[in-house]
Image (cartoon, rainbow, N blue to C red; front, side, top):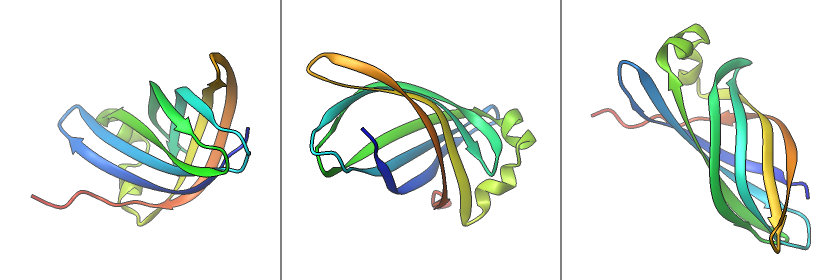
Length: 130
């Protein structure tokens, strides 16, 4: 039940004095001949080796056999933590993204938790100015 990350798009959705909201749509490929359901994620997200925040979500993402699928990751980071970990890194064109934690996958009502330890370089897109 392994998948290879193909690409992703990291976006800053909104920011105020306390928090910044991020979203990351990860396009993945399932090389296995059978499909499964992704029911939840529980991940720590790091950018350029600096802790950004935690993302815990429940949903039903259908993962087709031998096919592409998108996993939407949503994260809200405390701006104090963001400043400590290097806010300027978010304005680089390329970043080192790490996700560590667990995902829950299953089929026909039987689910199992799998560890995640992903690392990859990604280009980011920032929202257009007002």
